[in-house]
Image 1 (cartoon, rainbow, N blue to C red):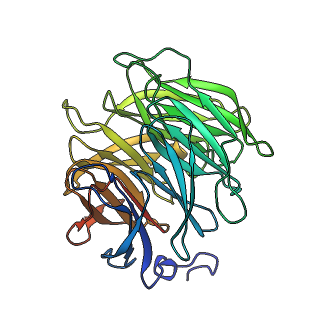
Image 2 (cartoon, helix red, strand yellow):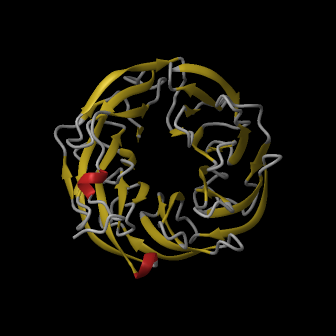
Image 3 (cartoon, helix red, strand yellow):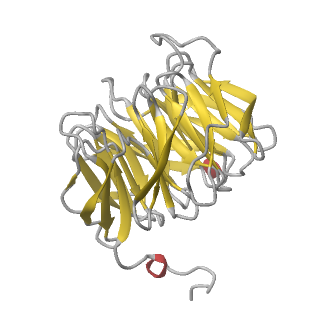
Length: 357
């Protein structure tokens, strides 16, 4: 019999509709009018639209506060900003400048008091305080990636992601332009970042997105420019990251623009979104996270999968397809990692982010 401390997957599966938030480019032809609102059925994966939060410009990436009361969006424009939305009544709590151009990623520190954002256009990362209501204060720090010099084919730094390490001790920023992963310590009282380490990928890799294994000692980086992935080791004590050898995405020799890599909650499988190839690569994770083994690629049934996300339980995978303006949903087999499409893709204008809660 199953131990009472290990409930079955069915027992863990939630019932009833769950919230889904959708990012878009409001300034693009055929784009949305703000943040898309929807629900999804956690059993079937079916998505139902419920409206829009208007008044947020180009909300291309979304994140939620740990208490799930406030949603945050980047305003990916030349004069970049971040916006807070109270979820109970969908009221916009205000926007704050990121101090840079085209912010494309943001995340909330696990303590819930700080918001991080990455300015792609100007190659900088920003910190904003979060007050008790979920609203944002004025920026407390801005760090520009002024070195090392840009990689081959790049004219400058392009910060593409900023996240907190699983142990909570460090903040990592991935920069596509400088081929570097920067590690910072956060002063949790002042909201300021101090660089403690940096790790370089191979020249011209163009690292875009990094995801940790649940064990916290390894991470995986998707390299947009040279169409590879790599396993990274992470030392929680020093914050030092070491980038391993480049590995295949399984998409052939064409330009595939890998976008994002995800890891299942059980730490057994990883998925990579390939925009040019319009596919998802499936990897087995071996050696407690230290190794990726390429299994196969699966058609995403959409055009240009810009971002992918797993439901909280890891039973569904959502792919936001920018050029086809659709979101594809897949069932995830916990044992084999196999993906099975859940119905027809959901129409969502210039879909660039899907955030299931």
